[in-house]
Image 1 (cartoon, one colour):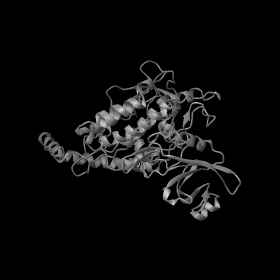
Image 2 (tube, helix red, strand yellow):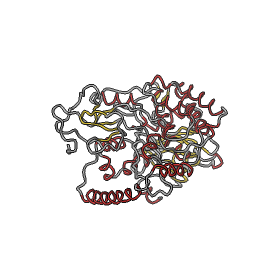
Image 3 (cartoon, rainbow, N blue to C red):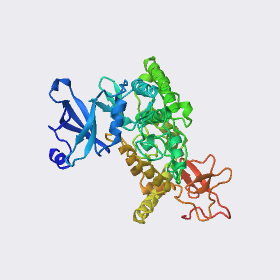
Image 4 (cartoon, one colour):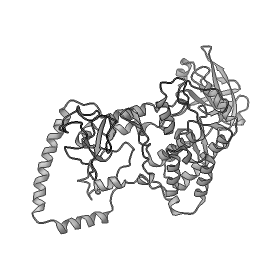
Length: 490
């Protein structure tokens, strides 16, 4: 590491930057590198964190120093800032702060946590934002990797380099401010889409932006997944937020706070001060729900579709996970399975078992032929919804801040759905049929992937060979003239 850093012209252990002695490198991000350091000549002063810019004259580091000097509760304590002259003669800004020894929020939640513990951390982060908002500052990059939780339970909001306050000069010349796409509020993303061709258009950041990002952060924390992507057929639209209680065993009080933060109406999100008071009060209130461990559960829709696995697992269905990172189904209890077997035995006639054996043999043979066909066929392009999701994930690289990005869950989610699973499920095609109606669609139709579709009421997947599956529903294609065969590839 020492040789590489020396070759790259970066500081190595033993180097001094102003009054600071570098002891070791801690982490590296898109815009900077953090180092463990001590004050030269004063080792007893303690350990500190020095964050050095990757690019000369990066304004984010001056901005972070300015905001850290506000001295807000839940911020790293500010120590110093300056510039280091590298071997190439360029000057790289740095900022020195308290060394926060803790886990990122997502790593902290990796252990068994209760709703009460989450509420206490939420109250602290909300309190830090409330203090910043009271001084006219906005963080603009609230996310799990920028929240550190120490062993004592203290929560610290770090990486203020993307922040803004009244009178601050812009950090970027883009329509949207610095930040991470999936945490941006929907109204900001819709604004950027609407004014993408107007170079002078600028989004005005507000406290409600931080509150929405905070909602996404804690939604991701307790459910393990992000919200449904806004992209669909090249267009952006606000999606309904799946209730966390359908994905995990959190308390309803915590769920109500998260859903309020994720409201598409910014005025419904309230204020950070209000949130801090409510979360603190809930964390101190008595209740068994708050003390229960937050664990993933099977959604009611998936439970109805699967009907529960068998006792030996031999006839468990092979299912793909959804875009919203829905947890895998939990096992049924032994008593439930036994009662199911008893009910089947009571109603099954004597001839049914041999008939089922013969039928299952035929199905196995058919599935083998289908698998051989699918494995030997030429690969087809991924459906449009997968393309849109990859485009959504492509913007996950943050515009500011230092630290590891928790992207593995999102980047791996699409790999769980193999092309052969999609073929068996007959998903909506990525483009409309030749004679299919195009938007604007008639009343009762919905626009998906550039075509008009009619949702078939009361029909749930599997949809058979004549309909298409989309978001756990079945659809007909809408045609302007005589209906074309739906089995035809568009």
